[in-house]
Amino acid sequence: MIGKTMTVSELAARANVVPDVVRYYSKIGLLKPHKNRKNGYKQYDSADVAKVIFIRKAKSLGYTLREIKDILSHSSDGKSPCPLVRQIIENRIEEHRQRLDDMLALQARMEEAVKQWQHMPDGIPDGHSVCVLIESFTQDADAIVRERNE
Image (cartoon, rainbow, N blue to C red; front, side, top):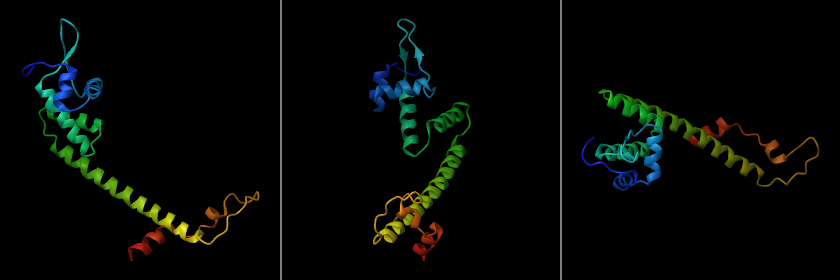
């Protein structure tokens, strides 16, 4: 142990998180507290404060707890986690770009639908039709995005 030991609440206060966060991180193995032999309470040290702060920073950058666990594992094995950190975030950026593109395409389709439906009357279901608005939508999503980008 490094320095003075502390309880869950003391660690939480020093790391500026609620105690349940510390308990959860311990439960999933991100923190590995020692047990007090006298009372069985979990004990933490200053290295755990730094680890909780690191975890929170990594989460703020979009890393999942699973990814953070892998990063911490590399570090505790004496290997640099930096290549892994870079690869994960580069992949995440690409995933987000794709999601943003998909959302922009959806937004364009929705706006085009509203424009097409502006002067259409409401329809009554007749057994062959559920909603004439949706059934009448004709624009190709890719064409909408291409038009917007031109």
